Image: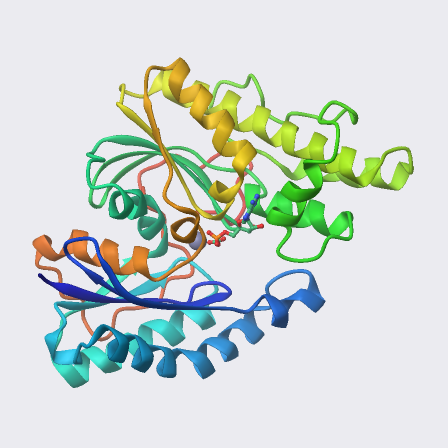
Length: 344
Ligand code: KG4
Ligand code: ZN
């Protein structure tokens, strides 16, 4: 069995994992920085980079020890090389380069989004290409047709905020703290999803793109009006988000060449209400629905090691001067979405 070391540091999770080619996770560590960023209501890049720099090396030592592996026994060292907050990405990538140089083991520079996109195949050996993927995280909101390793067709992206970002901003408006997604989901359980009239941006439009900025502003107005209970706002926001996702996915599925499976990945995939709606949609389309376990949905290093394992047969060995990339689209040929800002 081959073994790959994975390193993830693109946002606010410092993570290291050892994964076997037989899909076993031999050892892993994840250090969250929620406490450091909570006072600011969002991730502060400088604080994130410093925290990665402090924590990463001891975590790598721990994981190698627990997995009973020497560096030289590894098949590859895989590190996120983008997209993400560049300071943090550089910490992880430079560490991986140093280890690769010292051990002579190949370096694999991994696209964080590819980590999310292939993570369902780590959890589920029976998931074959192609599949339709809804990738929803704090930084990304895309619909992709995953056709193979390195082969992605992007059908949709967000023209403003990512879905996780909309959850986080709405949570902040409701005074729920950071990260907001889980807190909004919990509060929504006690609210009425039809209590607050909120918009469904871009629903019905031809291209399957997303937009959440208007929804967030409407949440702000609802809160400021003082007319609604916070739980009702949370439930109505979540319902509006679900309605947007389902409409946009229907549009994408209706236009792409048919695929047997619908897959959700990224941090927002932890949301049970969203998972339920996706499951119903898949059933409607006669598709199989699959989502990785929650620990593989939010940022982690096992998915980075796994993407490395998927790339082993390609014989990839990235150069030690590989550049960390703040932006790195999975599908460079995708048409930019009208109104799109900096989102890949
Ligand atoms: O994939 P991830 O860990 O990091 C990024 O690459 O962005 O995703 C984090 C995002 C955050 O915006 C967080 O609020 C959201 O995922 N999230 C959720 C839930 N759990 C995490 N959003 C909605 N419901 C949840 N249960
Ligand atoms: Zn992520």
